[in-house]
Length: 199
Image (cartoon, rainbow, N blue to C red; front, side, top):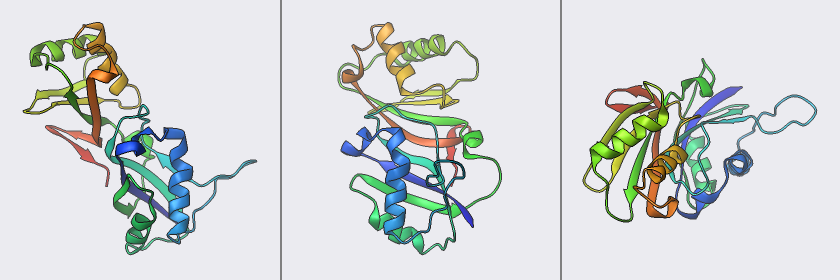
C-alpha cells in the first residue's frame, strides 16, 4: 500500500467544479490510468482520497495538495494519470509519503488578486485585511506587485478568498466578486517570504 501525495491544478471552467466533487473526479481519472485505489472502511466505502482546504466555486488553483491511497505506486504512473485527467485539470507532482495527515500540514496559502477596475492603495488593502481577520498571525504577507496583489493567509481552512472579497467589499474597495479575480497559487508551509508546497 502507498499513500501518495500529489499537487493538482484546476483552471478555466474547471474552477467551477465544487470541492465535494473532486474526490470522485480524481478517482475516475486514476482508475483510467490503471491505479488500484484503496477504499475506506465502513457501511458505505468510497475511494480513499484526502483533499486540502476547500476553495469557493470559481476560484482557480495552481497547486492544490491531495493524497490518494493506492495498492502500489511507481513514478512512471504519474504520466499515465496526468494524461487521463479531464480538460482544465493538471497533475504537477506526486510522491509516496508518511507522517502527519494532510490537514495538519496545510498551514498557509498564497493568493494572487487581480482587480478588474482601479487598484486600491496597498496600505489601505493591508489595513482592511488585518482588521477583518481579527487575529494576529493570520495575514502573513501582503505585497502589491505590478499586475496583482499577493496575499498570504494562515489557516487556509478558515481564511481564504471569501474573507478577501467580504472585507474589501465592506470597505467599499470593490462591489463584489465580479470586480476581482482571485487565484490560489500554493498551499503548504509558511517559510518567509514564501509558502512552500507539500510535494
